[in-house]
Image 1 (cartoon, rainbow, N blue to C red):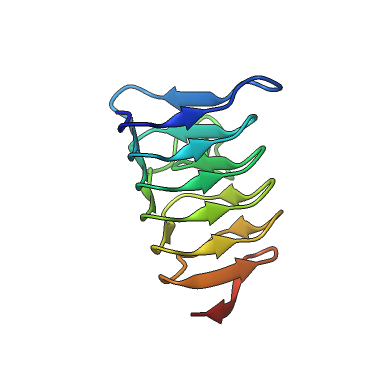
Image 2: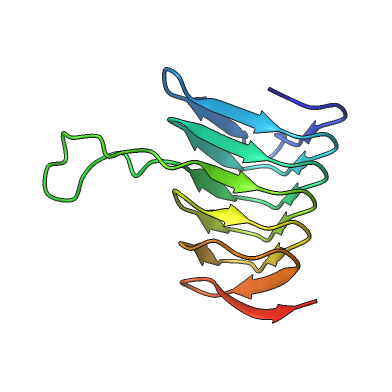
Amino acid sequence: MLGRQVVIMSGVTPVELQTIAGGKIEIGDRTFLNYGVSISAHQLVRLGCDCLLSNYVAILDNNWHEILDRRRLPASHPVILEDNVWLGHHVLVLPGVTIGHDSVVGAGAVVVKSIPPRSIAVGNPARVTRTF
């Protein structure tokens, strides 16, 4: 589902939006996806309103296979970006993460745990370095 005035820049490298049977991707009003963004939903990936996703951001709600039995699909865990979230260049958001409203995730971060609202997070794994 796409909200109003969503912008998807796919000129240099395509944007990939993939759902598996029953999966949903929801993108809120005025959200911007820059080139190279990849979103995969087995269950749910929801982007709030006024979000900014920089180049080559990847968001997935499933790890695609178990560690020991690579033929087995693990459980999916929804990914939620609340309103006004900004993800920098090459950010990776993994299953089960919620990023709170008005937060910023710095370039190259790997987000494995939820981030509270009004936070700045950086690193691998992403850590909150400041709240405002």
